Length: 483
Image (tube, rainbow, N blue to C red; front, side, top):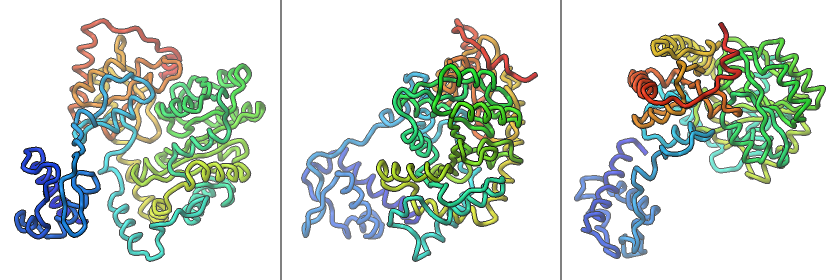
């Protein structure tokens, strides 16, 4: 449907709802005929048909064969904005940033969210890909697709792995509904309630939420500018006997750090000695100017499982993830995905992504994105510096800055203050297992350009400084900050 047609359909629906709210129409009343209502409103009959069909689907009106449309006996209430917006009084926990960002109204500013704005994404390529898919008579628009996912996209992934030096086969890749679903499948496959899992401290907050849903015991390992603290990692393996280690090794979320070769080799060595499986979320790989060390590259999918998706680089709406691992593990994961979802990635989504990856535009898009992000990171860091907020490190790429606040400031308090001005921040402790990151905020540089963000931060910090500051502990994060 064209945008203008959708707008006209919405206008017809609004006109009927106004008649209901003003009691011009009551339960059981017959609506005007399609032709008469179309003439009254100056729209086409097909527009009225579309509006009536939508209202019938919502339960507002009912169709009676041969008689027309009638107001339903009980009209479902229209949700109020207050009921659909974010709960601002909820606990500042690992769900905080996701819930506040996803439920925020369109006018909200979201420097704490985890995705790029629409004008940073390849929308023209997406529209072109959708048109191509729609014209293809063999396009997978209705079927489930195979259990492992699109062969075309899997071949493209194998080609990308080969560029890194990974020798893999088609039976080592499984497409999933998303990157998060990939991690969920792995947890279902390898964990039992009570198993211990290592994660970085700080780490991507949804790792914590997902592991708690699987009733895993979570142990955090301090993260440094070169990767997990190797001595603490080894001590955790000896003392805790974990089943898995889940991490971002490239452009780590939230810190932006990347593995050093020395740390990568040491972690792999002790993991192998203790029978530990590493789950490497490589979702930020394409944001790096050149590849940093990867566990999967060094290991070759022996004890390492790689997961990824394209939600950060292409579209968060067109969901598709993948798992790359040992062939026998993929076989078990295929069965598990069939049991829990019946099918994995949408065939249409997978073919759309494959089409975009196959054309030369994707590499150009990423090259331009890296250039823009480098500039945005420098500019955001400079603006924040004026408030005494400074990056823990300047990352090699990506769109996050993990920033330390001035002494006496608490990030959760600032986040609550900012929410009062419709601004979503990402306070440090939502990322921290040990709750030692209260003096940190994660900034998305692409969502931090509006001057209102800096102004709100300044007011929140001034308000907090004037009151009683809650205690906080910088712990390892402050100690590890590069000079």
